[in-house]
Length: 319
Image 1 (cartoon, rainbow, N blue to C red):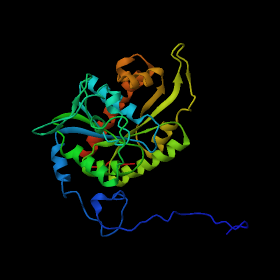
Image 2 (image 1 turned 45 degrees about the vertical axis):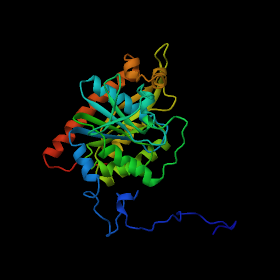
Image 3 (image 1 turned 180 degrees about the vertical axis):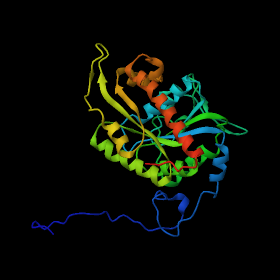
């Protein structure tokens, strides 16, 4: 106790009791209790694995905090891969703020189901999309409790007719909560994850937590993308580091993973998102779009390294 009669708080008295319902636990990957249950072959998890077995690469896009432009990165990455000749579906796992339909220009389309399950929505860019945003209205308020989030993840992994695809891009909400843990449980053969960050100390600290979750879940980090890395003047092309630059590269070096590239701020980014036209389509000559071309090339190199490591029997480092 200090002289003024106050105490230093060193820990929160959060309930850490366990009811051993492992499949519904957000702390599953970090749990070290000997009673922990292997849930991999329980319930519909096995169905989800079989349902997605014809997807070659399954990549999660995550960040430690919100506001770093993760969904913008996810949608433009998906479209960039499609432009390179790949077949791509993007799964929007952000149930509180599903933005993928708007960013891909299909926010007014309704989902349909067929004999083989829910049918992903086709966009004008060739990318297919799956999102709860196709079901709920913009102004509709739904309080998503833990079990509901997990159930929605189960539905979107086990009961969607993905078919044969080159890529599934999973856009996760910020943080390391229910959706992120559930996705990594249900897609247990996840190819890897990409961490999106920006050049601030707060973003770096939370990005490290995302990296720790990947490590605990055994998901390889394919690389780091630094978003909002400098501002490009649309008139003269001068780049100013208004939000600093270089922290993403430092984070990648610290984690021992590839640095995929940095995407500058540009007016075309925000306009494209609002208009439902990803900037790699609406402004293909912009610095941001050019940066994405390099990111896609670097991602392919990272995937080749990951595939070679698995073929040789080596265990890839997750973080």
